[in-house]
Every structure is written in structure tokens, then in C-alpha cells.
Length: 150
Image (tube, rainbow, N blue to C red):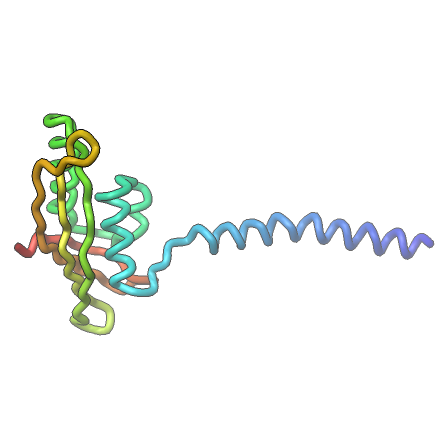
């Protein structure tokens, strides 16, 4: 009887210790960004920065020493236009086209459409810009620079 009780306590103890560890591993895998493909990383970065405007999320997709001043300036321009003109700026991304430069480097190009919307639906202005993002493979793909191509 004592052995059975001891065995039951051991099983319950191991289960109590294993559940939080399993929960942490599951949560980590579920929330970790997918860095496996350059075009996916470029899209995720642009969505986080320009559409969701979530800087901590956008930072998950950048390399250690990024040169992102141009794309951040675009974001500041968007926010300034919304504030100054009382519009909502909607951003949409076109198809992403990648060009492999080397095994650990790729360039991804996409069109970014910027539309100023007033009164919920009336488009006041719209323009499309082509942007080039340079990515490097460093424990997953990371955006290192973004420049306006046209």
C-alpha cells in the first residue's frame, strides 16, 4: 500500500513539474515568428511596421545592425498625414519577388500602396511605391535594409 501511495505521489509530482515546462515550450513555439523564408519575413516585417504599427513585433524580423531609416521615415510620414489631414492611411502590399544574391543573402521587392481615406470610404489620394528589402540568413532570415526603388 505504501509503495502504491509513494508511486502515485511521484507520478503526480512529475506531472506537476512537467506541465509548466510543456506549457512554456508550446507557448514559445506558438508565438515564435516564422523566419524560414525571406519573402515571408519581408511581408511580416512590413505588415508589423506599416499596417499593424507594432514596433516590438517588427523588431523581431530585423538583423543586428539594420539600415531601416527610409522605411521608418515612410511610417512617420503616414502618421503625420493622418494627424495633419484627419485621414486614415491604408497600406496594402503587392506580390513579393525575391532574388537570391548568395546562399545567405536575398533581395525582396514589393509594391506598397498608400491610400489616404476620409469619411471611412472616400479615397482622397493614392500612390504606389516599389520598395526593396535586403535580407540576410542569420539563425533565420532577417531584414537588414529597406530602400525605395522607385
